[in-house]
Length: 195
Ligand SMILES: NC(=O)c1ccc[n+]([C@@H]2O[C@H](COP(=O)([O-])OP(=O)(O)OC[C@H]3O[C@@H](n4cnc5c(N)ncnc54)[C@H](OP(=O)(O)O)[C@@H]3O)[C@@H](O)[C@H]2O)c1
Image: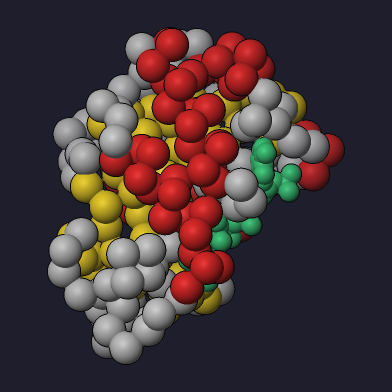
């Protein structure tokens, strides 16, 4: 039975993933978020809630104790967050990281240039890729709320395929990666609904 730390646990994808972890696996979850009052109806003996900011190194390091996988579902100053996460993982000896980023960070979407809006995502990916962590970076297409799990993957260096993907699909991929040691390690994956 593994232990997964969810950073930014009130995020849209994270809430779907929490639901899928609890319904489909035996994984124990630590839900890390800035305002624990926002999480409603999480009633499971397999869930621990930690209130904290990812930029708070001491708190983050403490929450990492005993974890097997760190799943980061964040927005904002992602470069600073990525640096803190990598540092805390190094300090605690945790190797596995699943990090939600965005399509377009390598200008890999045919016909699109997203420019400076993706700068935090690019810089965070660079921090993670320069580390010796067993990371999987996910680069999802535009999110939809479709109640479906339907996605295909592209690897770094390949042109991105498709333009959208359901939140539930990204969450299902996170759960699969967390449950499958060694799967897509040190990879950066484009995620989209097949067209
Ligand atoms: N919308 C799209 O179509 C699309 C497509 C591809 C990728 N993405 C990106 O994918 C990522 C995940 O998406 P999402 O919809 O699940 O994100 P989201 O709902 O915006 O969640 C991001 C979470 O990050 C948390 N957070 C921000 N700063 C934090 C800090 N310093 N410490 C702790 N938590 C912090 C926020 O917490 P609070 O609740 O405390 O604010 C929020 O819950 C985002 O970066 C998003 O931009 C989006």
